[in-house]
Image (cartoon, rainbow, N blue to C red; front, side):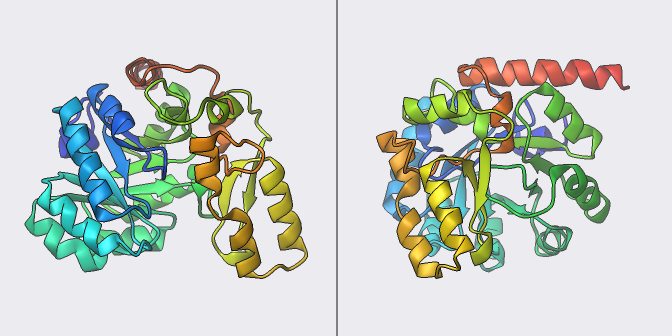
Length: 309
């Protein structure tokens, strides 16, 4: 399955693994890249030297292209921006901010820059400032989200920009991938299904919560603060939403959620941890290897797209 994204990134399939904090580390990134997609290491709030180690460990496991996702609000963003250049990373995706200040140094190093956006205006701005492609993420996605659905966001961004477009949010099988292509995408980014793959280091309790999730089992917290997050409902989401309803301060809400993702990913605390997952969790029913999942995804999408040709 070839597209502008496979050509741009020099990968076999137009499938990108989401840059999920605490989840997207070198084992998963290398496995996705070896499966023919593009794996990502999530820098999140980690120190730069941790990211450097992750990059070097991934290189031991794969000779295929992989990238780093940089959260631009991190206090370590400047350091990580420099380290990806020093380590010869070929692809950077960005989230939680505007990457314009880093564009020149990344471009000089030959790095492909792909910001994650949630609006037409931001997609147009990223194209103007030299982005090579964008990931358009709909509100169906897990973790930090915008408000517009993937179904309507993708075609509007497709009409507004000429650079390659990657769809994210709600894609968990070949039907979702084929739909994204029909809407104008050149590739897909997937997070939730990769969380439960065999190579993922996520605690089994977290994986099981996704595997047994139904269509109505995610909640969005943080809308009152302007930082909405989608996760599987549990004690944490219930308490957070109750506090929001009572008009709790940002500081009070932060105290409640602090360290929640680590509790879920590392400790397996499915009651008080933040089980970030998209609405597609209801479609995730099996724990495949990355290779099995990617090949199944692409095979299903390819058949559907040929039917519509």
